[in-house]
Image 1 (cartoon, helix red, strand yellow):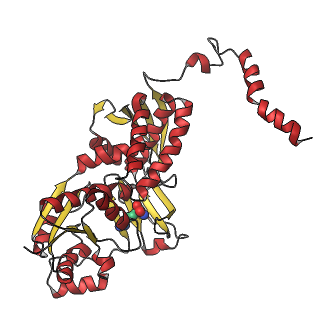
Image 2: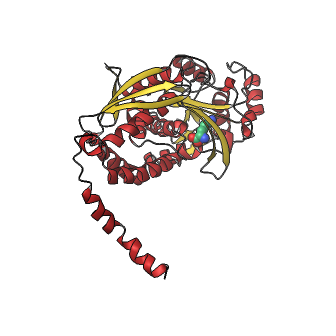
Image 3: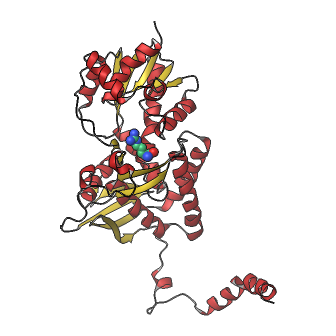
Length: 397
Ligand code: ARG
């Protein structure tokens, strides 16, 4: 039997041509593997068949939507994960689950390498290969577009010459990656960071400026996970899908950012993540109600670290695993309900309640019923500011 390679297959032009290209360049048989992470669009069975028509020896399709939501998106939500405080890691979260199935499929179908369709300029190549390295250190990685210089023009030429069954759709000016957590749009006229995004590039969100009535939604969380929306029980995947609809219709979750890639490039990225931004806003506010100050402050540092690790492709690392243990422990009391107003591109929390609440009305109130002994504050400040006072006597002398 000749050697085999498992290719992460999307059904698009590059990876379709990549099948024959890989075979020609390496002599390996190509197994195609397509994963459903909620990217929508084409039917997965059609994609499976196309890979065979393009010359794959085997073609597998994996529905990983539930697992993606439960095991990748929920940890990100618990971590309120936003890279550079803005980007909810849409693509960064899907790469490790795809890599996991690449490694698993390679093992099952006797392949000694994996392949992906990334270029040499982005983060995704790093994420795929670093994740595969951590899960199956003996597999080698091949990137036909990067390593075998498969350009778009060559791909079209190859597809025509070999009569590959790929619809010759007009080249989209953008590079798009999408899954149930959101969409990433880059390149084209967006490469000038001064150019404003046009309405055309968005599909998960409506124009926030459209006139419409607000939507109010109540999300119930148990230990950091959404379990009901407006009183109806939901799985993590259902929560994300329903909120994509509700928040997307209100234009919530658009992000336009100049981002620092791991490979050193600054790049202009546009994202839309209606459910992601809504859930993170709601979850963060429930934490404000239920997590004590020191722990909350420390967690914010861990959250930034977690987002950077995941952005940098280190999902399957010891540090990430250890941070997850910390983050999971912080979620012990993050249960309760958050009411959120979706309108004009914003997801604004308007109410929160929890049986685990640390909010004490009698301590907070300025009305009758106040149990906070204000006379204690004087002594507290005296001691709190003592170091400042002592050093000031020296510094100002
Ligand atoms: N810059 C984003 C990230 O690194 C999005 C990448 C999108 N990938 C793509 N092939 N268009 O996570």
